[in-house]
Image (cartoon, rainbow, N blue to C red; front, side):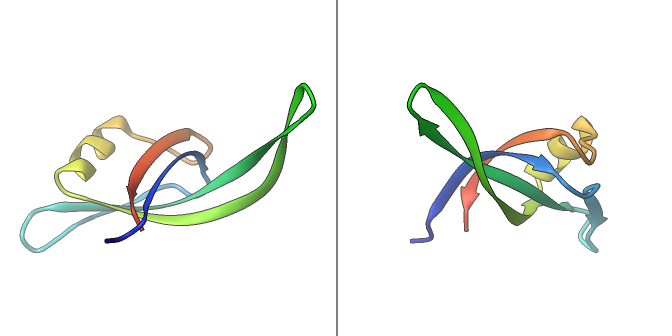
Amino acid sequence: MLPRITGEAVVVMDPEVKFLDNGKSMVRLRVAAKTRKKDGDRWTDGDSSFFNIVIWSPFSDNFIEMNVLKGETVVFAGTM
């Protein structure tokens, strides 16, 4: 079984939308997520991790309708 990943990240490049020969869509995007560390009563940002995400139809159709652009925050869940 593939590991599951869930997180919140910032889109660092405008998503790339493609329509396949069978008419279905796919979206590729690159995101950056930061780890958070609790230091006493404060939370601080840690290092950034970058992920390439591919979204397949039918989920990509919904993503396209949302018109997400570079700089926006997204929440994602899926398998690696």
